[in-house]
Amino acid sequence: MAQPTNTLDSYDVRGIREDLQDIIYDISPEETPFYTKSAKAKATNTLHEWQTDALRSSADNAHVEGGDTAPEARGVTTRLGNYTQIFKNAVAIPGTDDGLNKAGRAREMAYQVLKIAKEQKLDIEKALFANQARSAGSSVAARRLAGAPAWLTTNTNFQSGSSGADPTGDGTDARTDDGTPTAFDQTKFDSVMQAIWVSGGKPDTVYLSAFQMNKALTFTGNNNQRSNITAEAEKVIKHMSVYVTPWGTVEFMPSRENRSRDVFVMQDDMWAVGVLRPTRNTELAKTGDSEKRQIITELTLICKNEKASGGVFDSTVS
Image (cartoon, rainbow, N blue to C red):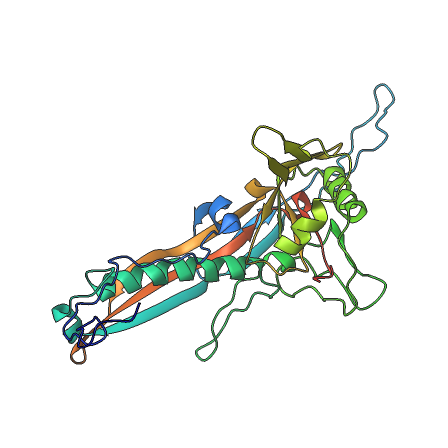
């Protein structure tokens, strides 16, 4: 039916108040599993150092009665270190904000500072997984921490037949990516698990991308992978919480911040984060009609002993 003549409808009326919800919806991912699970240690210098050691290999040990005892050559500890990296972000909000009535937040500064803190955690997680060597920095170049790929060298599976290569293993160089990656599969993963066990490690967490997680879901013989339909709920259930091997049991944990080509098999208690300056929210000098604040964190990655972990590298990502 047509509208009666001269009807004053909502399209003609002026002064209708806006209908804006007093909430802001944000589903951006903010999980940082590796950074969260890593123990936090106190760093007191921009170069944080630690030592590793290992038992000698087992040997035949038999001696005659009454024989003299001669000292044997003993190995020394290995001294390692990583540089702290400064993570810094800032925001400036004009004084006018104090007089505004905004939806979803009372003060813009408080809202933005909270966002920055979450974003910076993601930056830290990305750096911990980054294939970058440590760098001391200078007055014109930023210090950089060596990420996890720069430490793993003993228990790795990668495309060694082409251009791929392990790093030195002390954080001074990054690993060399192969230009012709191959698919991640169960055979590669099991070989890394076995190598870690032989080295004495006890891995408990696997960090991998969503793409590689789908590859892991095809592994056979794993006790906790299920694909079935429950009649009462009419649900299809397919998930893998843990993977049981003769070399240990590990939890698969998808991560958004590691490179998809890298699959990390980690013993979590053999990794830590050395914190020189914990996350702080500080006010910057006022230079005009605005408020300025910075969020700053300074830390490094500690690889207590890389033989406790490993990885499958040079994996296809599509």
